[in-house]
Amino acid sequence: MENEIKNLQKILKSSPDNFQARRQLAMLLLEQGFNEEAVTNLKYLLKFFPDNDEMWFNLGIAYEKLKKKDEAADAYRHAVSIKQEEDYSYNLGSVLIEQKNYQDALSEFLKVNKTSPNDENTIFNIGLCYFHLKDYNKALDFFLQAIELDRYDVYAYFYAGYIYKEQGLTNFAIENYKRVIEISPDYSWAYFNLGAISYENGNLEEAAEYLKKTLFYNQQDVGAYQILAKIFVSQNQLDEGLNILLEGIEKTQNNGDLCYDAACLLKKLGDEPNRQKYLKLALDNKLTLTYPADSIKREIKA
Image 1: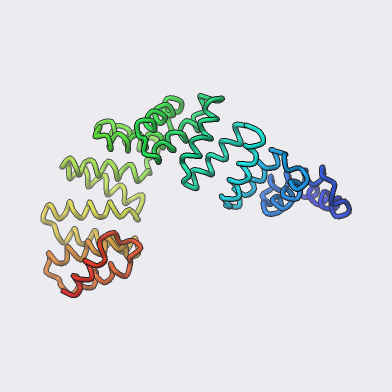
Image 2: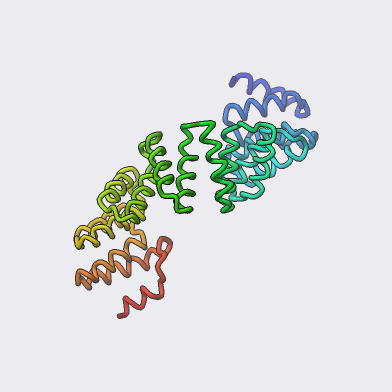
């Protein structure tokens, strides 16, 4: 393969307008992961063949591999505008989801769905678009279709569980989150959501077990530390609640919300010097602070 690339480069050095050789080279470069070089050659070819849908599509692939999402979306759009192909629309839809352009992504995936109504990946992505557009009923319908086609689609189960929880159908939510764990035992968000449901239902012991599982798989889960601390406080175990918050502060490298929660608990414990320390630390980490900064500043002055 390397020799083939070198031979083609040699041909183009003496004959740069050998389009057949340049196209072969572009495809080999793309296949071998030389994406910058592939882009250069494809762009050169497109100056002469601007209506070649395959070249635009391959240019989109090269840009996507380079993580240049805007350029990839533009190239895929060109391909789609020239010829309606499932792969073109699917790839464009995938990039648009990454760009959070869910409405346009939905349009592309619906095109694919018309010609391939049983493609599970397309159906899931349609559900994902509807989910982000907050049309939960339609989203749930497509997630359930995805599950019918693939009983191991962990993400479809997870999103279905989330929607059921939002709709107040807690038992269905629990059923779907438990299915997530059966398929993927290290899926921390499923454990967190199960823990949150148990906490809301007053099942504190069960909630604590799920939240500990969450932190076993994801030591950065701020919500898990917060709910665990609340469970300890509700049982009048203030020191244990503080310890879990301090552990979270260490693991998350001074998350602002956890610092403020620790300051509030230190107030209950009557430890004013450390309370002031964590109030200031909360303000020093504003990027991860959702509590009102002005209110915290007043507490420091108090």
